[in-house]
Length: 273
Length: 273
Image 1 (cartoon, rainbow over the protein chains, first blue to last red):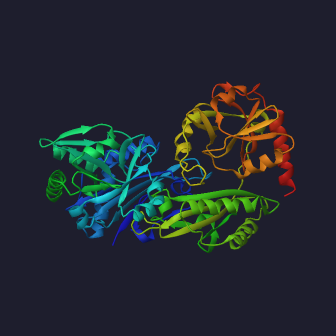
Image 2 (image 1 turned 120 degrees about the horizontal axis):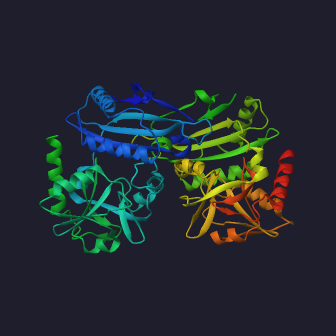
Image 3 (image 1 turned 45 degrees about the vertical axis):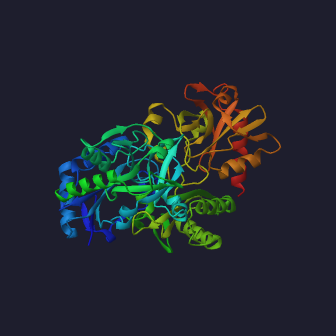
C-alpha cells in the first residue's frame, strides 16, 4: 500500500486530495520529479534533489522543506510501502490561489508508487519511436507540462510505436519523458540542448567513461542514418534500445552491443546501490 | 457563497477536492473556459459552449454531459450564488490515471466565482503591456497551460505593466489571457493566427460593423508604430485600452475615441442581455 505526504501530513495515497483552486490544476503551474529506490535507498538522491531545487528556483517557487527533512519523509514513505524498490514522485504546484493566477504558497506532494518496469521484450528487440516536430517549453525544467505526449497517444499507438522523438529545425532533442543517445563506433552522442538533464543520462555518461568517447552536442536528424545504435535513458527505462525511428531502422535494426553493455553496467550499479 | 459541480455532485467550492492522480495536476492535461452572467443569464452561452466542445475534441476528451444538462447546472450554480452577475469557470481534466499518463475518464468541474472587474483607472488611462517573445502551444485551444504568464509575473510588475503581449518572428498574437486589436483610422486590425478565438473579440467585431472595417490578418510589431489606438478584449476586461507597449506610446499615448466607442457599445449590449 502506498502513502503520500502533502504539506506536512502523511496519508494513504487514495485519500490525498487537493482543493480545486490549486494553480497546478487551474493553470498547469507545477513541477515534479521522479526517481526509484534500490535496496530501500533513493538512487542518486543528491542529484535528484539538486535538480528539483533548480526546477523550483527556475519556476520562482520556494521549497517548503529542506533536503534533510525531505529525505526523512522519503524514507518514512518507503518504509510504509513495505517494498524496498519503489518509485518516488515529487509534485510542487503553485498552490491555492485566490484570484486563479497569483502564486501564494506552493503545495508539496511526495508519493511512493509501484514501479512499472519496461516489458523484457522491449530490451530484446528494441522499441520503435516516431518523429514529432516539437520542442518542450523550458525543457530543462521538469514541469508538469506533458500535454503533447498525451495528445499524441493515439498517433503513437497507431504507428505501433512506444514514444515520440522530438525534433525541430532538423535537430533532435529528447523523447517525451527520456533522453536520447546515438552510438557510432565507440562514440556516444547525445543532444546538449532543449532537453531535460536526466539523472539516468548523467549516470550512463559516467558509466561509459573509459569505453566510449561521450559527445554532448546538437544531434541532427541526418545523424540517425549513420548511427550504429540508438537508445533512450530514464529511471524506469534504464538503457532501452531504439531500433526504429519512424520507417528508418537504426544500424542493422537489431539491439547492439553498446546498448547491451551499458544496460549491464547500469544494472550492476543499481544492484550494488 | 459560491458552489461548484464536480462529476455530478454540487458542493460549496471550498469543499471541492480532486484526487492527486488527476492528469490535470500531474501532467498539465486540462482545458477550461470562463464566462460571465449578466442579469442572471450566461453571456454568449452558445458561442462558449461551442468553443468548449471544440477544445475538448481537439484534446481528445469527451464531455461527460451535454449542452442542456450543462446549462441547467450553470443556472443552478448561479442561483445558489445569490448574485445575478457572476463568473463561471469550466475545467475539464484528463481525469484520474492509474499509470500517471493515460487518459481514462475526464473530470468535469463547473464553478461560479466572483467577478474581479478591471479598476476604472485602467479604462481612463489605458494599460501598459510588455513584449514577450513567446507563442502559446495550440493557442486556439483554451488549455490550462498558463505557465508563461505566472513565470513572468515579477517581470510584468517590475516594468509597471499589466500584462504580456506575445509575439514571435515579428508577428503579434495576443496577450496572456486576452486578444489584441489595433485601430488605424476607421480600420480595426486583429491577429488571425496563434490566438485563442475570444468570444469578446468576436462580439466586438460584430459590434464594430458599420462603423469600422475589420481586418483579421497577421499583425506585425511594426504596425504598433503607425497605430492610432490599441486595446485588448476579454470577458472581464471587455474593451480595455492599451496606451503603452514597452517604451512605445501608442498613438498620442491617450485613450482614443474608437476604444471608448466600442466599450460603450459593449456595455450597452451586456446591460440589455
